Image (cartoon, rainbow over all chains, first blue to last red; front, side, top):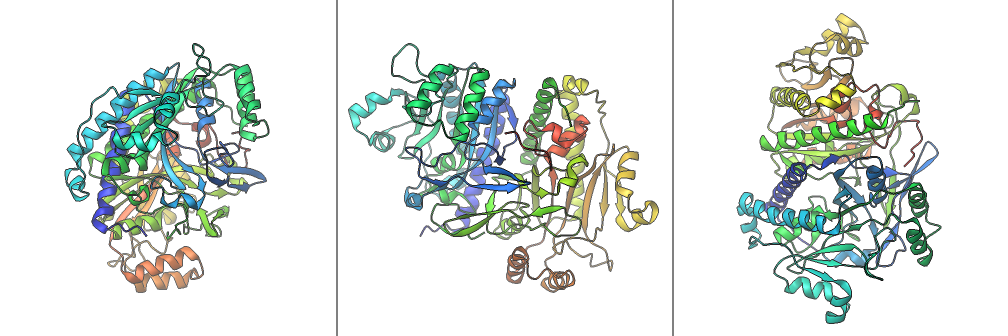
Length: 306
Length: 306
């Protein structure tokens, strides 16, 4: 069982507060609109059964005869916001993902966490890289400056890092390092790094210039802390979306149907991503488990006290 | 049915963003820690059946054989945080309250909304008044300064206001104006005003200097927009808490039992409150209905689109 002392709990609260303050200030300064999260919706990404996901089930409640699901990801809402004319925005968005308890000890999974979800109309992959490089670099500096006592308590030697962060193609990483590339490279790296062209979501944009490549990306932390952010340019071509939906046999999923309806009416090009707040606090503090940074832990398979 | 045009929707998003930016910056500047919200918990205030509440039911889900409720209010978590040593903090906290659909047309009820919930160790009623007076006054100035086009679109003439806001005793208001005092005075007032000594929550502090009075408060907006904030100094005397719980026959409620357990171990004096973000945006913009300010409306009795 994990143990976190009282001074450590308060120190994690302090660092989390610094992270939220800098996040808000950073994105506002760059002209992002901040919007409120959604918790209940008729539609949310249904991760259960997706390859790579260990979510046991999507949860819903019934209110006035309507079935409302607990938010797993605001991806569909983000596309609607872009379509409705919001140019660039971010959301501090609580996500519920009822993970399989086998994920208790990965150190990086929670069944309730907060994601900073953002999207920029007309943006390209490289625009997102530049925003996030500046964000992570300035965040590290901010925490070094504002939380020296907390870092000392954790025995965490946090050093300023430099960008731009390197960019790798996923196929080449797998070829060079095998399927365990993420953990291996994360442990060896001196700075966070980008990985592009990951075969996954049907709404990620196919690279028109390179057959079989995708304009999507993950940001991976150095220090063995693995995935920081996941995102992509979004596909707007209805034919391509439809063929990917068919290839993965996703036609029956309600959120896919809602997405297809939106795509049929016409999508607006955008790019964006989402990064976990608790994982960022873990990276900054070097916490053994991402649940350690939560005053009220939400670790898969650990009972909830309050 | 309410109709909100596309330019209005974007203008509400812009004002909401300004409200979130100023809220974050205001509370950080005053040394408040910002913390992340909780959505699922074993315990939350169960408003169903409480006098004055029209909540139909508390909703819960089951995850790994544990029943987890959707957050209605973080009041218990706030007390635990204070007890655990967090000095002063605020949370932008999504709350789910499945209201009776009769509240569809009140203009001020939502079944999902966001509350800025805050608490200060050792604070008195007057400390909270001073913080909130400064907050509302500076917020009005900020929106006048940063959102002139949006206010113009809404035909909203927002003027700087002055503090300190007047303070009234609830008994005297009822005596002078009858049970409909809130709507009546809110419509006539030139600035927001405070009402104190409201007979309600068992955890609100009884005034030791005045028998039958309470050290709690509501902040009421001028302009007919009614309740802005609700809060109080917190009772720490176990005997007084217990007698109020018995008087209202609340012993069986799980959240009351959790509260009593906490109180038995010893509570730490504090004061705080919570104000609705969407209601604040409504006040600033003069929106006819609080649901108008939501891009994805959550009005009791109105079907959810997405």
